[in-house]
Image (cartoon, rainbow, N blue to C red; front, side, top):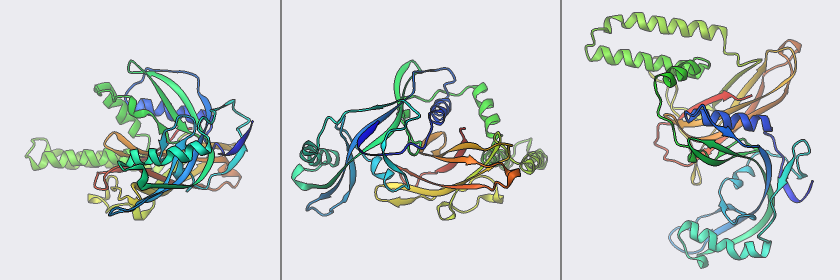
Length: 349
């Protein structure tokens, strides 16, 4: 279908979008749920610049107005900062739905100042808007029945960022859940380092408190570290693709005690957002070319704050001369820069 304005070309496939949704629900602690049909939807937006006139501060920026629902969206301008391809042709490989433009340009210019003013707690006459551009944003949309509720979940088809997960409550973890989490962590190097650091921390805590089992300190440390050593020596192979993701050095805090555990994240402040950048390395150890996608996240404890996804297309096999493919990522989120943020990643397909 030919659109009347450019659209971001989808990078995330339906299979990857579904995997992200399934993994996100599982991370909330709900193994049993039902999903409706996944569909690709193109939504029209009016992207525009705004200036606040007068006052002690005069913030400026860009924001998008949903031309179908009339809602403001801060995420859309972030897409323009990424090296994404635009096209007026919808994805022919997927049956797509195009939402109508209910708000035309003249109406958008009229209501944009009112919307921004209400959003920022200002008067409409204090806001000046300009440089209106129409574009379409592709999103995968699905209804999920989980935790006794029906919720609408969306995956941005350009970057793989999920939306709507805040509607799903976290399920309290029992013994079986804790064991399952531990086994899952043992599948990745970051998970192993987290387990090792927590185990050593618990043992040291017992020693400081005079725990009668503290005499086993060295034995426990040796067992844990030896297990980690042999596992790391074999490497972590998720299917036929080996994956390694990490933030760039400038976004990492000092190394923890004994060099064990994860380094804290020191995000940059970009406008009103926190941000980190990094890259993922994909290596195809199989016999045929393949495609792989990684999900990268910023978390505090078990609570996710920022998401992103990275896809490597048509990875050649290593034994045919294939070399690791490096893909960059950027994660932005709302929050305090003083939180104890951690970076985690996993292969979703």
